[in-house]
Length: 594
Image (cartoon, rainbow, N blue to C red; front, side):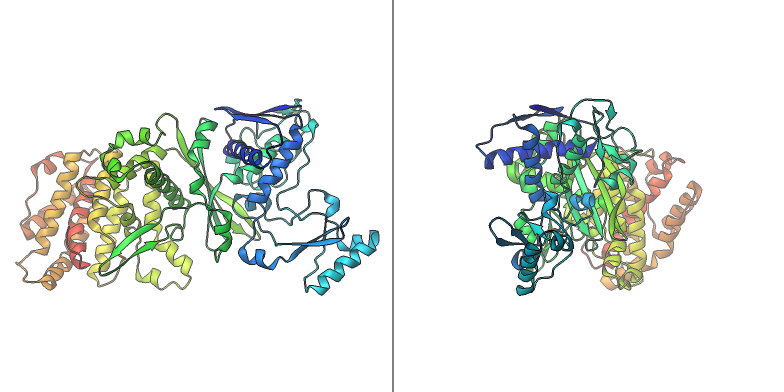
């Protein structure tokens, strides 16, 4: 066998494994220029040719394993607490403790390391019987160097954390046995070792059929273990929760192009962190200005507690990195939203982002969330539209921090991670809707209303630019074409203008002389705003508007009254409330209306 084709499937892990294998073949070729082999990636397959094909694939497998599975922190590298004994040379060699992170940890459950050759990792009690002289040398070395001797010792080579593999022709030859991972038939299958989270957990991970006997092809197993090399991962809640994402497309070449090396941290950087290897993807951070002080930066990944937030940050990072590398600020501002995809070279192929989450259960991580977000292009266009909005730039960072909602209840929670998680639930809901192209109007109406009640009571609900969140809402709802209600841009603007008129009338009722009196007016309008919020029918909504009109002499557009119906009155009511609360919340939170 001197030629193998790795065919694209419907399984994201297999496809990612193929692209990762292609990349590591390239790295291996550059480091081993004397070895002769050929490989090329096509839209639907990777072709590898070599006179010693399985031997080559095995070498590349362990080459990748050192990089992705065999990771050590700076502290572990400094201490070098592992040892292997070279029997022929009678030499001891120190090497660091090794831990496995990211998707590789999920696959292997960070299992104890083993050597490529099984006989090189004997148990010390067996070695004492079979080679007592060697066993005594090892025990003496550990004793003299104050190292802890465990049940296993290592001979002639250090251990590796990637599951050992023995590639044999019989597992790669065509036959009658069906592999549900690749959709191909082979002469023999192998046990599905260290992929159990994807067989016994979420059935989404199975390409074709569910596994009944735990058998897969060695080819599928091989590719699946390469997939962590492309997984964009991030831990939160310490190492107890884990999020991983992959780019997906209908072409292997397209998948390869979507991944840029500058998106990933180098191992040396991840090793040095206080929490080593907490993430491998350079997610975009937000910078904020402070009056009279230096700007400060927010680590957005540290501030995230959900797959939705991380998914959005990956797309934002993709957008920002592309522009930072390939375009000037002038080009960005002049680029129409419809042209942005061609400028990013992602207009011709479908793109999605596959995201899953795993949480610690007992001593293992178990997948419990899976979603394939197909609105990637829509989200990138939306980000561009917000960031380059001509009337008022809507900085994503302001939306990011503005959707944090604090209450006295959340502030009293002692568990830091739990408190931050609860405060970000509104943001998680908004981003989830955004990723799926669903309306966020009810969520933001609730945010504005709850913020108003807290501010009117003298409490703090968190910092936000209400004017920018309103602009974000207007742009977003227009972009998704006002799904779920009979709304259009004219009626949307009329409803918001009505709300602004109500807010302005309440604040300036009785011609207040100063900000204190304006705040008092804003608080006194509470019963009218609550009535507006609680209106459950179109008649109740009209009655509330009439009461406000009589109290504050607000004029109401005939277009609103004439176009109100059972399908759109809820949306009109919500826009009107947000328009009013935008002004009231700005006054109550001591912001200047923009």
